Length: 388
Image 1 (cartoon, rainbow, N blue to C red):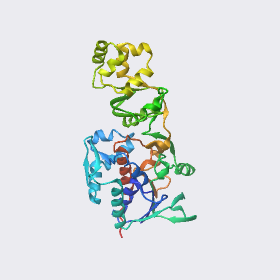
Image 2: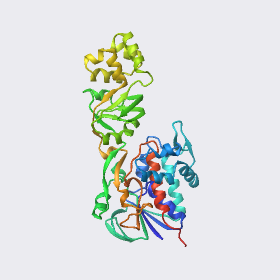
Image 3: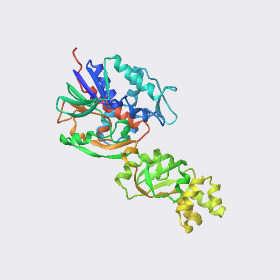
Image 4: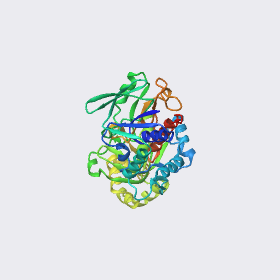
């Protein structure tokens, strides 16, 4: 079979890998001048490829049964074995995240994978932008010329809507809707939050609140939160995006001193007398003291019990999430009702979709990449073995 794949992110490369292993001829089309742009950007903050949690906990990180079923078919253990197959060793970090072996950079992981695919006969065309498709033809624009490319099967791994400069620009959404394919609106996910901060927030922009616990509704997450001029960023903030989208009326609460109980704080604050002295004795940072002093009323700040309460339950009034293009990922996308279990489109059985363009969500920490790897595996695994 002649397989066309649009995209060169992790889902596309995994789908293509399954196809070449089945003996199919695979051609990739990428609108950028190089492969895996967003894949490489994801590695700037630490290239965690997945997470080593046991499967039940691991699957619980995903937003719905369909994406969980995909990840169950190609989980974190399967990914480690796959990477070893193509020549990439991994290790598990202290927090359970799975990384390439020390010294292996993201670009090396990508190049190793591309070389492996090329060695299996896959062909890559760059600066080729998809403009449309029919049931058996792909429309590609290159160097001002439009090409109509027939295919036996087409895989689309076009990304979500975040980091548009990497090629993940969501231009496909209107095209899919024109074809009558159900697509849920894309929303920012794993994004920072615009919050109401004191007027001089710029002075503390970039300051990290370490070892805090953020809560929203019934959800909570421990980690580090970074203050910005507009609000807050960090893994706990991203983790609570989904809860915020469901209940935007609720505040985000931060336990600024989770190591101490409320009772201990109250007792120590009463003993210290002055609020400033009490907060310093509790070894709270200048940024935390600034937040408390400039957010609470005088009565709240000077009363030991109220001050202790706000140290344990500091409220951040959220105005909104940051815009989609700043988000790490997006939720929403092609409806699961529009695809078969092998991720082929019900309206176009010879076309499959995978990666972030499907309607799923997951937190950072390796879960996003794993979801992309898994949907690429499921899609590519759906094709029969070639007889050639």
